[in-house]
Structures are given as C-alpha cells and as structure tokens.
Image 1 (tube, rainbow over the protein chains, first blue to last red):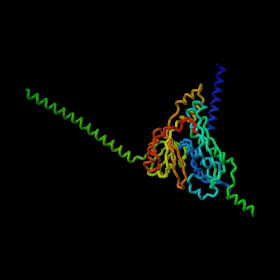
Image 2: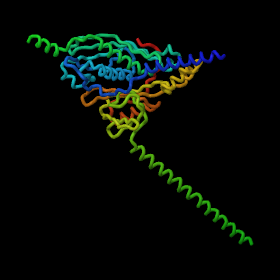
Image 3: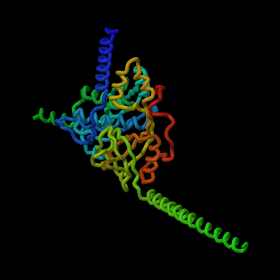
Image 4: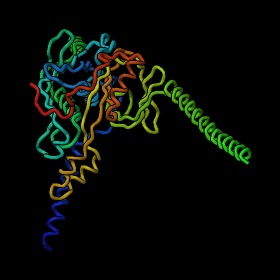
Length: 194
Length: 196
C-alpha cells in the first residue's frame, strides 16, 4: 500500500500537468476586439483584402457560426499584417482601393459535435469545419484556392472551431506566394526602364 | 323588565355592528390603496423602465471585449453593451440588419472546473461533466457601420431571453426577418450528424 501512494500522486500530478498543458494550448486568445478594418503597418507592395460574408453552401450552418467565422477571419487577417487594409463586406471604401483581393469562404463540411460529449468521452463529439477559401481579384480571377479545416477535439466550446478555422485560413494565405500588386509591379517596371 | 332586556340587546347589536364596520372599512381601504399603488407602479414601470438584461458578449460587438459579461440595454435608438465597470459601447438599432436565435449547451465552471475534473480519480470528472452543463440562448446580430461594412456580434443569454431581445429589437425598428419565428428546433451545439 505504501508504495502505491507515491505512484498515485505521481500519476495525478502527470494527469494535472497534461490537462493544464492541453487547456492552455486550447484556451481562446486574449480578447482582441480591435477594429479590424483599420490599417496595418504596411510596406509599399501590399494588397488589401475584403472579406466576404461566409457562404454556407449546401450545409446547414447556423448564423452564429457564419458570423463567428467572418469576424474571426477579419481579426486573424489583421493580425498577420500581410495586408495593407482588411475591409469588411459591403464597405464603400473598397471601391477606392487599387490593389484589392476578395476573400470568399464557402462551407463544404460541418459536424456540429458536442462540448458535453467531448468532456465525457474525450474522443467523441469533435466539432469539425471544412471550408473552401478563395482569394480573387476584382475581375474574378482566382489567385488562391485552398480547402482549410478547423476543429475542436478536446476542450473548448463549439464556436472555438471558427477561431481555429480562421487562424488556419490566415496561416495558409500567409504561406502562399501571392503575385505582386499591379501598382507596385508598374512602379518596378518604370524604375527598371529608367 | 322585558322592555329593558330588549333595549340592552339592541344596544349590543348596534355596538357589534359598529365594531365590525370599524374593522372592515380600514381593511377595504388598505386593500384598495395597495391595489392602486401596485397598478400605478406596474404601469409606469412597463412604460418607462429601459430594456436591459445580463448577457455575455461572445464576439464581434463594436470595441467590446470577447467573452465579457455585462448589461445589454436599449437606450432610445441605441443598443448598448456595458461591461462591468467599463465604458459602454453602442450601435444604432436602425443599423441592425438581422437577428438570429440559437441555442447552445456549454460546460460550466471554466478552466478551474476542467482541471478539477481532469484531476478527479477513477474517471469521476467525466461523471461530473455529464451534469455540469447548461443550456443558453444565443442571439446573433448583423449590423452595418457608417461605411456600409458588415459586422456581426454574438451574445449569450439565459435560456428564454433570446426571443425577448429579438422582439424588443424588432419593436424598436431593427430590420429582422421572420421576427415571429421561434427558436430553431435543431440545436447549434448538440447536432451529431455530419452535414454533406
């Protein structure tokens, strides 16, 4: 019996440490409700992006999820500092922006899951989201077309899947090699000619 | 002799009548005045008291922190959210394009509870998780800013309050499609089948 006690306390300690680690890695980020349509610190050759409202496609996705994806996307794209401006759907200012990309998001697959199931079983009840993310130019030319996932598997509310999804989309866009904006390309061409 | 006793009886009867009247009249008076006060206060309350309720702001409302508790109220033509001890933020109700109701089931207790459940031996935490969840209403608002940009905000309310908020917004001039719709039968949180 005596030898079991240290083993039990070690096991408990390990479980607590593991739980703390998992919880901390899955915690929502500190509140970042900054106005996302503000300008970022931008270099000369940068695109601006306008985020379209999420298209649920043929999937029955609740409005709260659509809005959460949309708002999280604005937030995450602003955080990457890759774009000169991150504009909202319907923003009148977009008409005056020269190098503008439009981000279209269409939901392809959705599994709602359950927070209670996750808490009880650990392995079941995951919330899964799969979307098709397209970056288009003004004339409709698709510059980037990717399928991205966002899941919540262990801890956290279902809406957290939208945050993970938006984070993954922003990461994908950041890693992709976008063509140079037309204005900077024009500037470079004229510089070379001189 | 008989005459005297009859007189005494009449006197007793009249005095008891007076006592009864003295008891009944004040009682009636008090009852009437109480009812009148209740009516007055109830009427003025429903007319003048501004609409407000305790909510949790999940995300998206103008400059408000995510996952913040506070009071959502309607002040004239504005929808205002005031976080505990901080300045209020507000939008014009007329800018609200739509409001959707939802429902979600969440585990209560936050991180401390999660850690406690993880530390409980023999899977005791899992049993606790079975009962440590609560259902909430969610209200998703779509509104536009001065530039025409679309915003979305999600609030979490006590069960049953979502419909009240939506109706109040509709009454104050928000553009709400299907304002008479009830809460969707399909829960946002507990659907298990995979779409498509």
